[in-house]
Image 1 (tube, rainbow, N blue to C red):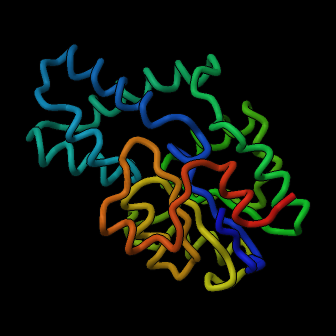
Image 2: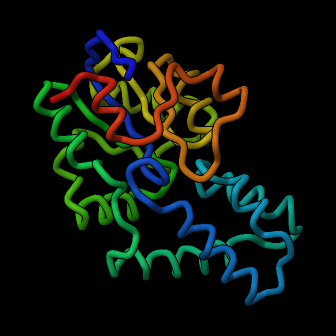
Length: 220
């Protein structure tokens, strides 16, 4: 396997679909709400907003369906939160091992998630990951959704690191776009959507899992 000889000051993680096995769950939640209300073609919409924050998701829903989006999104969030409260949205395999290895190597770590802080912190705490993150920057703290790099730049500022000396990990297309635009070394770990030619050109490397990320970075 290819390995990196670079040492990075920090690692900034997306959450949904990267360290939290959540994206498929969210799609199923949208399917349940669409069935209740007779909304057609929900999956193309739901896939299109992967990696976007609440504001951008609502705007896209209104554009696609010409309906007030708040109540539908609230139903999806309620279904998802119920599943999360029961621990039915687990961490991806090898998440804690990778985070421990990064901390032992002296790397700073942050979450840069489009989800709300009121959702990010409880989930990370419940699943035992919160102590490994120095900073959490969430979707309700930024004005621009991914693919804008604002959230990654804010995380770098909070950590006190330079983007060019740090790395970002993402699974979604908009996340990769945002990560690369911020100047971070960009590692894509695909979840539901597999990389296309654009992603292969943007990401510095594409790895199949967090296990391979640890091996690539030569972390023990």
